[in-house]
Amino acid sequence: MVFGFYKTIKKKSVSIKDKYNVIVIGAGISGVSAAVKAARSGVSVLLIEQYGFIGGMSTAGMVSPFMKHSVNGETLVRGVFEDLEINMRNINGMIDNGFYASALRTASYNLLIGSRCDVLLNSVIFNVESKDRFVKSIDILSNGKQLSIKGDIFIDTSGDAQLVYLGGFSWAKGDETSGKMQALTLFFRMADIDIQKVTDYASKNKNDFFGWMDYNFDLNKIISIAGFFSNVKKAITEGRLPPEVNYIFFTTLPESGEASFNTSNILGLDGSTSLDLTKAELEGRRQVRRVVELLQDEIPGFENSFLLETAVQVGVRETRRAVGDYIVTGDDIRYGRKFPDAIARGCYGIDIHGQKDEESKMENLPEGAYYEIPRGSIIVRNSENLLVAGRCISATREGHGALRIMPTSAATGEACGAWAALAVKNNKKLREINHKVLQELVAHNISLKN
Ligand SMILES: Cc1cc2nc3c(=O)[nH]c(=O)nc-3n(C[C@H](O)[C@H](O)[C@H](O)COP(=O)(O)OP(=O)(O)OC[C@H]3O[C@@H](n4cnc5c(N)ncnc54)[C@H](O)[C@@H]3O)c2cc1C
Image 1 (cartoon, rainbow, N blue to C red):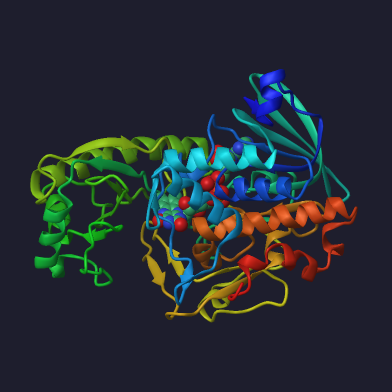
Image 2 (image 1 turned 90 degrees about the vertical axis):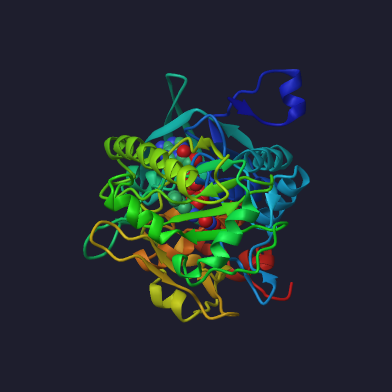
């Protein structure tokens, strides 16, 4: 499916061109942000996605809510991300920082159409032609047909750094020593939960829940509940739950009585191989069924609840990431490092969901602290026209564990779109663009008082 401007669609069927100024691979939140920003800047943009819909982990993976992205009440990520939020709120698809996958899909389409970006769905990139530090063209399989499309600048937002990998550029994967990658999780959504009853139960059994929980529950806002440790432990001992499930974690959604569950815990698999993804799908669905049964049978408030849906695909937190001019480290995050060529900011800490025989890690930043993300982390080393954002960003495993969240992915995506458009419009190589000029285009994402 291709869509360009509505008007054009009405008049005649749209065909894609064989060359674009900017080609973005992968329509997750980082790809959408990159494509919208570049197209709004007035260059021709094509966004390519392997699925028949937009959103990547935010929709296919049904991930919600947006993780922390404000300090002292001030949001760190605005621009395209804020436009997405406004769009979702307008269709009652958001509560606080929680949202429906369907709302994110609709909001993304609205922004893409409004920006006059071309979008090609159901098309998978399988080959990259690169020469002398430049990506020249990509080959995609679209409706069984092979197409080759040229571009001036390419942006890899495929989550798995597919373009980087296929183009023969440098990448890293997993832990620097063990090679381990974070656990996978299949999200699911339940309805007809009596949230009041669950919060009452949690308030009376605080020892059975995580210490970070806030018990000042306001049913008009998003509620996060994580724990049920004793139920989980007992169910594992009795063989009713697989031992990988450590706790039950859910956040509520806009519709009353609905919640989204980030609970299944799939270990020992590589989310960038088809075989392991297949195993993960099966294991994820097995775990979800068991967790739902436990909730319905034992937890006050879940007596009449039911499973609404499971995500289209298992959630993948970590696979390949690019090696860029700069590699963001765990210490850059921990110590809130600032950079003169910053293109985005974040305040979410290092969050690593442990693999088999590996402890999970959650290092929060002190309240009010934030770090900056340098532009060297979104340009691929030894390339002249290849940028990366979102999960593909250049970082150590720890750095990646912080930068991978949706708001930050949107911010790095937007910076890629801005940088690519500047290079095209000024007929310059990416590194020839003065970082201060780029910073002007993403000022809302880098200065606190803006
Ligand atoms: C289980 C889980 C829980 C999480 N919890 C949270 C949370 O609570 N809050 C939060 O803010 N973040 C959370 N995250 C992180 C966040 O969801 C992701 O890191 C973020 O959405 C990544 O966005 P992205 O655009 O970089 O990549 P993705 O969303 O992965 O998008 C990549 C896109 O590229 C497409 N693609 C891949 N290969 C090709 C190809 N060859 N050809 C064409 N298209 C291709 C994919 O289909 C996909 O649409 C979680 C992630 C997971 C997995």
